[in-house]
Image (tube, rainbow, N blue to C red; front, side):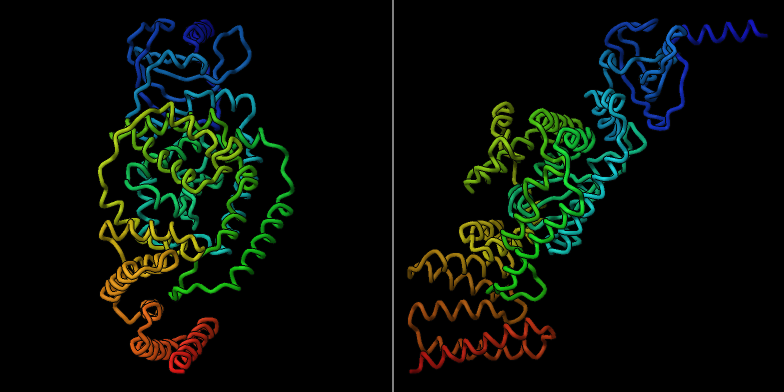
Amino acid sequence: MKRILLTLIIVLLSHGTIFAQDIFFNPTLNIEGVLKKDYQNATKGTPVVLQRIAKLKATPYNGNYETQAVIVANGVQLGIPISRLDIIDLHPDSNNAFWQIAQLSNGLISYYDKKGYQEILRQEQAEEADEYLKELAQSQLLYEDAATEDYLQCLLLSIAPNQFINTHKDLVPQIRILKSPSPDALMLSNQCLLISTGLLTTLDTEEELCAILAREVAHNVLDHAIITTNKNIAHAKRAEFWGDVANGVVAATEEYLYQRYYNYEPGLVFATNDLIQTLVNEKIINRMGLDYSEKQEVEADEYAMKFMEFTGKNKEALISALTKIYSYYKDEHNAKALSKGDIYGTLEKRLEKMGAFTPLSEDRNYLKMTSTVVSFESGMMDYNRKYIASARLAMKNIDNKMACPNDYIVITNSIMKLLNTPENNKKCIAYLNKAEELSNTPNLNIHKLKILLSLRENKQTVTIKLLQEYQDLLENVIQQSHETEETRWLVTEQIWAEKLIHRITL
């Protein structure tokens, strides 16, 4: 019996298959492929199945276990060193398999062997991300619209894997929308993917957005944030760092409270550029390991394009999306964002390597799903006195025949801030009439802008009539208002209207 057992062990050793238990790696992968070269007794062209990643003792003469890929070829299990995994042409048949192959193909397993999984660092980074989201929420910098968030989440679910090659990584990330005009996407360490309102309004098709989402999934799958964090300088203590951030938020918020947006809309909260810059800046990006290297950015580009092609989408959508992002920063004369020290520092160089692309067809569904974000963004630009940007965004909805009353109000105010000619004033009146036509109830903003336009044209009788109607509207709203700040503003408007009537009738 002992001789039989000894013979069996020798046979197993000859095939390189003694396994060590390792709870780090997922128990099953089952990815099909074909050998590109001969390996042991399996010849080139042999179909194989990559079963899993495990610790193997390859020979009886080597007492050390090493991480290897366990495959089945010709009904026999074999162990292949991770460094030699490129001898297999793996064929993904699902999103999970695609991203698992990405993890296997870029040296990530060897990195884990050297560095370990660094669970303490990961926990710290996740807590940092939680703290960041808390600051964003308290500062009302998260855009909340259930329909838009669900639309984005569905897109993300169609891209992100729900199983990695390791068992420790959290599963599918969740989408949140950041109130920021800059076109950004940030995958945080707590598996929250932040998409800015600026990104949604800069892009024009669902495929462009999917390509950007795939880039962020690639950064996440390939653990770029953890790798980058290891390279960054030592952090300040968490409480001290976020305490400084909170102090900056307080200062920016105090400035906001001293301002009052002309465009009255109950419950709508815009953000000042100062507040956004306090919570979306290079120091925070660096702290969370999101200041990726050029190599990591190129890697994310490549995997995003491969994924788009794998799923039957247009891989050039990524070039189109990144070109629009680059154009945004260039048009804004944002030299810092396009410098070597910031997120998009390598974008121009990467776009040059990607080459030309064919413009994508119009995507009416995407434009419809993001039209409310465009309206919000145009209002926020108007609030921050960026009138050219606000006009451009409002016109995007108007041109696409997806405008709401606020789009017509914002375009009117933007034109009035930039121009004063009879032709443009006439155009503004037409926009306000369209806003009135689309409004279900009388709108304070429409009336006030009509008053100002009437004043420009020196139509005193018309102006007085409009002011009296405005006073009546204000009184009706005051009767329904339950907020002190809102009531105070409405009373201030009443006083303004009364004084203006008096001035005109002098």
